Length: 114
Ligand code: AMP
Ligand code: ZN
Image (cartoon, rainbow, N blue to C red; front, side, top):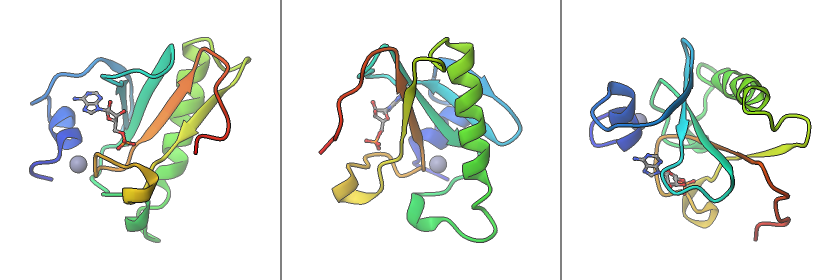
């Protein structure tokens, strides 16, 4: 989608540090990491937020989680654990409206995040 920074990353118009890619999903390092591992995982198809999931596109969430598990293993954080976060809308703290999942780990994370 035009003017979506993550679609521009997918098209290579904005640079990114790729961590993982398959047919449905792309993952790259967050530009402002809040943990030793902070990766953003996005579907290649533009979906604005969790509110725009439908019967037709909902399976991509499974693709994202499966990619997250593979990335966590690859980066060596799977055994100690990690967190997958999706912020939705203003109260959820979403700033980029192309649905994305933060994969965070490499340290003991605080809970709750509110
Ligand atoms: P959220 O607040 O959940 O919408 O998360 C948006 C995330 O995108 C933030 O953690 C930003 O640091 C990250 N971000 C924004 N622009 C870029 C970019 N060009 N490359 C990598 N990460 C980005
Ligand atoms: Zn997009």
